[in-house]
Image (tube, rainbow, N blue to C red; front, side):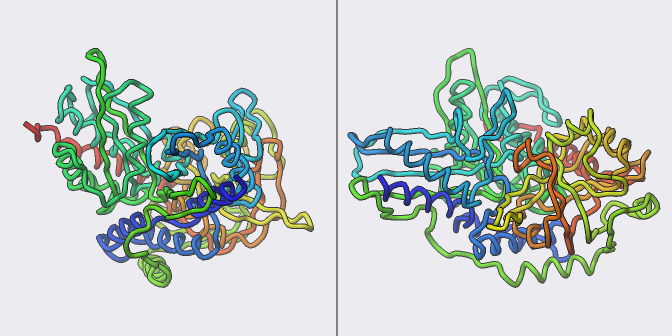
Length: 512
């Protein structure tokens, strides 16, 4: 079991830090489809740079290492209780070593366990089989993409598509709608797993199970093969693009599975996964605990090093780049417009769900007038001298803060908010009234942004846990794109409207 535990530790670290070969090839194909100098090309340049940095640094690709989910097949007679114990120990060690962010939170008290262990975490699902080895597969699916999962009960009415009936065309409409509703909030371009049938829970299990397939496999079920190909051919015509900035690639993979259902229910369940598709597997010797073979590692491993930096540099040259250092004035903010590239130097503060809720009812622990708030839950490490360093620091999905953001900006004088996926009409109105701006960073680019953080100057409200605390960060060259400005303009609203109009072209039946 000691050797098996080490094998599980290796699987966790590799899954968190080293993107699989099939996913790398899908990202490369997307990058080649975009025109140089566009926001989509810049985003993919940052993404590919981040993939390479995570690989080299052996650090998390994305700061949100999600809720680890294991699917395990064991020969008859293998002790599954001991396997669970070894995985728990490996998870706790990987968290301590900052390969995973502490993500397990008590649902009633909000207290973070600190080691990713707790009721229901990690998720471990067993099957027995008659092969002579243990098959262990792991997926790290972050909260941003998990929140864009969606389930449809047919028949139903869908925006832009009309009625979806209990047939293959109805299923087709649901899948297209699932891509539309995700927009850039799930860190597009993404992957989807689709489960047809089952009940509420088994349908979602089937959908997530599809994410364990290879990106490049071919569905043996003829109707599902045609459906997967249709979705891949047409979902990218919605124009949502990488990070929801618009562009040629919105979807990188679609896998569909089917199971029986009861006559009264017809569910289509969609599991959305971001571009940082962290899924690996191993074959393990049940006698020794050693890894015999790594899965999802067939074919070429794409290296991205230099081309990523060149694309980011080219995109900056094509854009209006504005450097801001806090405290920022209202006049500086009013000069910015959607599409501008902003470089942040100096101080910024992190703030996620717990911080926003706290600031609604309390004074801020620091003076936030003219300051920058970053929607980020970083992976942090403390050295022997007690100093904090940032191991991963990409943006979290901003829309969760929509109920609070505008009020907090006006209450404390905050001028800029950084996150991903955009925000809604309440925040947009507050930006216009108060003189604020929303900056979209590249979701999942946790190494790219961690490299911009030169020093941790302090931290407040650590009682909320590391991801939810307010970290004081000193940054240099932190780049993001203005997607909501102080003049009432929102790129996110524009892309949503445009993609909804394009969605309507797929209303008519396709499958007879």
